[in-house]
Image 1 (cartoon, rainbow, N blue to C red):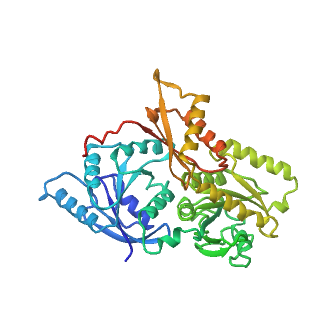
Image 2 (image 1 turned 60 degrees about the vertical axis):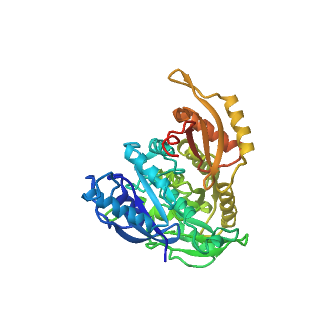
Image 3 (image 1 turned 120 degrees about the vertical axis):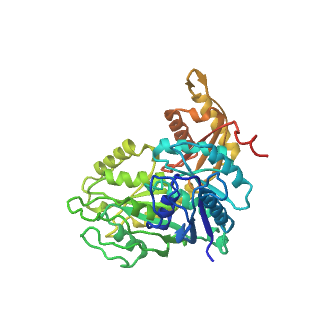
Length: 447
């Protein structure tokens, strides 16, 4: 039997929207009116390459057991008892409520592992607001936007880590396949590159855009002898009814490719250069926390290569500063020239994406960064940062503790991330920075 995951939370935090997003189709009715979901709904889904059963529950409310809200809560509690994992959904727009805190205390006493999903966390401001959920005492929150699909890759990774199953040890061992996705605009040469990597005409190719219609999953062994699983390689296609604009991006399909992968190869047409659509795909991969390598395809047809490379570098510097140093591999998928240099770069990006920095080294860097540029005054008060840890990799994540740490301005956060990237040589890696105040609000509420 596949593992069971229950989606819990107070009314109107987006549980049904998340349920539909994970299932991949609209099953649960979604509306802004609280209490739309009254009965449990179940559906099969595939999360991080694993089959699971999802349960969409009614909103958790404090109510008399004989009332409808009381019976809805009892139904949700029953769903939790039969589950292997609970996704506790909160709404970062409204912030934590007393109801959220009460149910968090209850969930901490349950034997089922709990993952906090901080929903409606659109953009960087929303991700920062999600950090408030640390006070629930249920571990690291996962910021997502179930409505727009942001952060679903991180959620898939977190679920995968919390749901061990038979055979998971082999999947996570040193011989497990590297999960790779090839993404890009229509007609950039994604299918041709796939064929070149496989050494066979697996995909139909041609000058017509949008030839690839379905997702493709294949495995191959690269030159290093390592296994590679190419996941959900299709997905960037023209939207229905759009004929004039060739390069309209389907965000949902891009997420479908990115949520399963560890490293994404963004294929860019070297003759056209990087446009806004390429940048949107790269930013989406960064938000999903994936390692990224740019394959600059059709390089053999470029006449002034110095100028072409300079244009690419200028665009990356101006528009993808958060991925400073990203690997760029010029190649020709059609002729095969340069293709042999791609997978070594992918392997290098994958190793950096998995890298953990020992706590001692991390805090020596942290002390040096503070000495070089002390945190600024905020509202006339100095922010006191005490220490840093690296709670996880995949992608590299730094947790900084200190008094009023969450008030650090954006420019100082960027300074800290860039300093970490340069000190530990992590070019092009998406780096997460979690800021945590030293107070522990829930400590006195639960013994």
